[in-house]
Length: 475
Image (cartoon, rainbow, N blue to C red):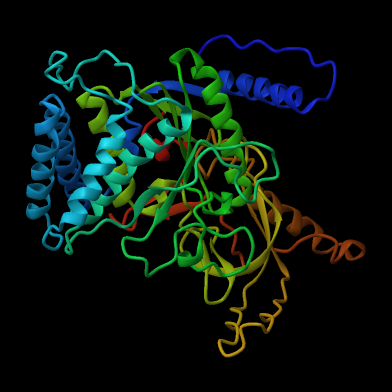
């Protein structure tokens, strides 16, 4: 990252306020960003050996098709369309999907052609060019909107190929797709800014809800979700600038936008994102104490395109915890409430709590990401299906749940700053003092988490949730 310089503000015009915010976030990026980290793409790799194998085979198959289509582009124009459509038709014929149709072939060809406007290849009339050339060619797109459409086209090619390659014995868990609307203001954002491209998780077949937790308690039918991004629906943002000299500003804007996802989604442990300058892409992971950026993925090279494809395929096959979602917090669409799994202090038993009220949400990009919920241990009754207008049952919330990250330099047994341990000590000292009775909180049946541990559903192995395990290594 380069050196960031601040500017003085002499009035409160909207443009200057925005510039001040960008400069503030640039300083944050300078402090927290760890660039060129090895293994970011593999951080989303499935843990299960069978799922990892399926993801690898799918990546290789899609990358092979994409590179073959790039090589076809060097043919004379009259031969290109015919040859490319035949390649797509043959590829579809080898996939587990039903017999290829002209509509499917034309759709994939059209999407790929849209992407190639961003990364053109010279035809033989202009001289041949290898698809792994490191030199970024002059793009054929005329404006930013066309660039967004080209990037969306590549993502859509990957998503559709993942769906078509799905093996019933080891299918992907989801598809990662772009919202149709680009350069747009998210519906539930309180700030006056526009995102370039937003990504969402969609089911392989539209029969189950997406994996995000809604901002409010209203049930959302995935079929009715609009294609304009909403923070509560967004998996990740992609921020794009024309030139690599604008990389610092690109990161700053991504930092600013990603902060709002934390505020809207109460089940996010970490968040993915992407920056793109010209045709160079960096994938990012935003943890509580760092932002780690990948090495270059240059869409002008075969290696860069394959890594880009691998990341989206990994996102499709991995468990939701590797997307940054918290497996201990989920939204129950039938009960219309959050379900929070709290673990006993000895990490042996789990208790479910139910909440419809978020008292404090995560308001910062880095730090403790403290969230507080009013909850009850009593499972609420589902709403009356025969009368959807009837209000849902009121919950008697007499339990307060706090969820936060904290600096953990010692082991769990040696950590003197562990809040549950201090609360137990306070209760022990105060319980016999009558004039302070009912003035301090009580622990619910010893059901406090201390440090949170997850059980990997793919491996069945328990691990402590910390910033190291997000990447599998120190950053």
